[in-house]
Amino acid sequence: MDRFEVHTNFTDTVKRVYDFNLAGLASPSNIDVLRRVFTEPNSLRPDLTAKRVTEQAAELFGQTYSNAPSR
Image (tube, rainbow, N blue to C red):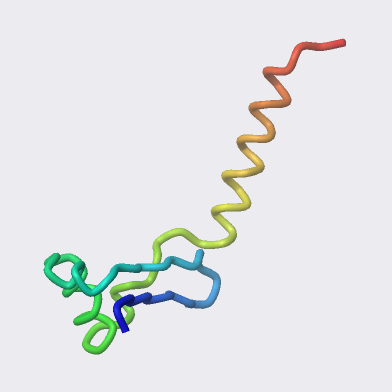
């Protein structure tokens, strides 16, 4: 086992994956992720919701459409 992956799977949030190898355990940020998995799992909850991703995509499509040349 030389690879670690932590997958967040909170309801209505965007999934986030923290991955690192055995050498990556030397990084304080990776140790912090592993510590929080067991002591404060909710602290790993992403701020971005699925709804917000959809809203951002709609805004981007709207901007693209309004900037498109008219025919």
